[in-house]
Length: 237
Image (cartoon, rainbow, N blue to C red; front, side, top):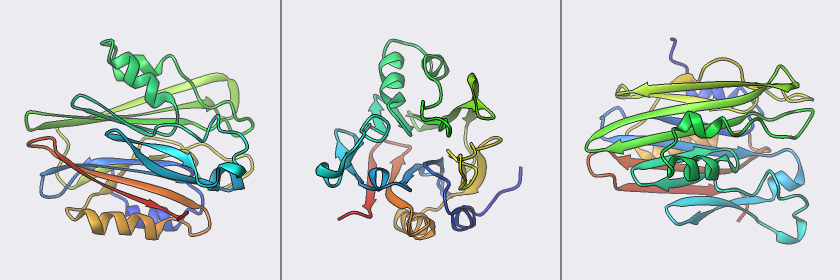
């Protein structure tokens, strides 16, 4: 699979929607993830990321302007033991609760489908990172309508065992801007990672469309001991 420039993938797409990146730093020391949200409507743009426990939650920047919280207020990141869950919706809670009951990542997501926001039927994208005893693996998932047909849900899970240093994968909700918005197609894109967390964070934020970007979360997890560092950038301040 051809490795793509993550910077170019973002700069050349004005509206990838929400996106998840998961991978491993070139030096092999860090499990890396990033999650960003974008918005076209005032309601979608009226958000910030806030820390909640070991994860984060979306919040309304101006509560008086919040119209419909159902698909925009959720916990994108939660931590369950040595597992870090990253998603674009409240399926974070589904994965957390069912994996806590010994179900797998894939089994947990079989209880969910794409978002009920026709005609877009936004895909649910999810990722899980497992860091334990110096070992690391991750998986990603997308649940989407059958080419815009809400009567069928197409489910795809991609598992990456023993990730290669410097490699990561990028999945996002929309192929590009449009009306209705076309869903992401294919498997997650192979993209390069960076050792320096600040450089990686700045590259992502500066590459996202200035008008549409809302918030960015980045986490670097030390594979040896599980400690982590987090960075959050919100356009609304």
